[in-house]
Amino acid sequence: MQTRTLGRNGPAVSAIGFGCMGMTSAYGQPGDRQDMIALVRAAVERGVTFFDTAEAYGPFANEELVGEALAPVRDRVVIATKFGFDIDLQSGERRGGVNSRPEHIKAVAEASLRRLGTDRIDLFYQHRVDPSVPMEEVAGAVRDLIAEGKVGHFGLSEAGVGSIRRAHAVQPVAAVQSEYSLWWRGAESEILPTLEELGIGFVSFSPLGAGFLTGKIDENTKFESTDFRNAVPRFSPEALKANMALVDLVRGVAARKGATPAQIAIAWLLAQKPWIVPIPGTTKLRRLDENLGALAVELTAGDLHEIDEAASQITLQGARLPESALKMTGL
Image (tube, rainbow, N blue to C red):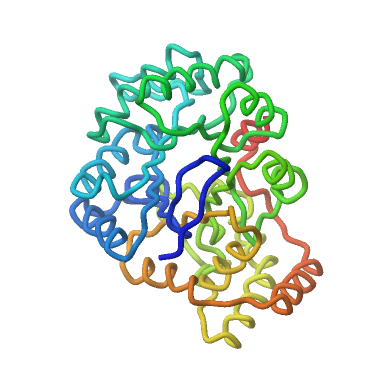
C-alpha cells in the first residue's frame, strides 16, 4: 500500500483511509457488528492503516466498534477521532450545538480513549469550530493532551482558513478534514492553498459524494428513512437528475481506463495533491476492494485536464448539506 504523510510532522498513513461512520449511523440501518469488525480487519490485511471515527457517530458506538476491531493491530494503524459536539458524556444525549470548552475537550479525550481501548489518540480533530471558544484555547487544550502523551496530532474538521491559521499558530495542525470530490470542490478556492502554504495535510471525506459518484444512485433511488441523504438538497430527485451529467463524465473516463466510476473519482482526488488522503467508507467487502483498486488507476495530465474541462461545463445543483449543518462549516 502506498503511504502519504499528513502535514510536515504528521503521521504517515495509507494513501486511502477508511471512513467508519457509516458502519453505525447515517446511512440507514447500521451493519451487523461482527461483520463490520471483520471488514475493518480485512482493510488492515489489505494495507489500510488510517481509520476515521468520532464520538458523535452513534454516538459512541462507532468508537467502540473501531476500537474492538483494531485492538489486535493497534500499533500498525493510525486512529483518528473527534471532539466538539455538545454530547452528554454519560447518556449520549445530543444537546444540540457545539462544545469545545477546554475542560470538555479533555473529558471527551478520556472517554474516547476508554471506548477505543487505547492509550493514545493518533489524530484528534475538532469536529466543528465552536464560535464561543477562542481557537487559541482549543488548540491549547489539545497541546496539553499531546504533552501528556494522550494525543499524537491535532486536526480540524470543516474549519475556515482563519480558524486554521489561529489554531496552527498555537499547536501545529497535522490535517484538516472536509468534504472534497468531483461533486463538491469548495475546498479548492481557499482551504487547499492555505494548507499547502502551512504544510498541513488534507483528509477528504465523502470522496464518492456520499455514493453519488459510484453511478449507483439516480433520481429514482429510495433511501431508508434513517438515511441522512433524505434531508440533503443535492439528493433530491430533481438535483440528482440534473447532476447525472457529472456521473456520465466519470463513467466515460472509467470505461476508457478499464475502471469503475468510484475508482476514477478516488484516483482523481489522489492526483490533486500528494498530501491529500481520501477516506471512503463502506459496509461491503467488495466495495472496499473496489475503492482500494483506485490506487492502480493512473490518470495522466491529459486525463485530468479533460476531466476538469468537462466538469467546468456542468452546473451542479443542490447544497451539499442541510442549511442548519452548512451554518456550522467554514467558521
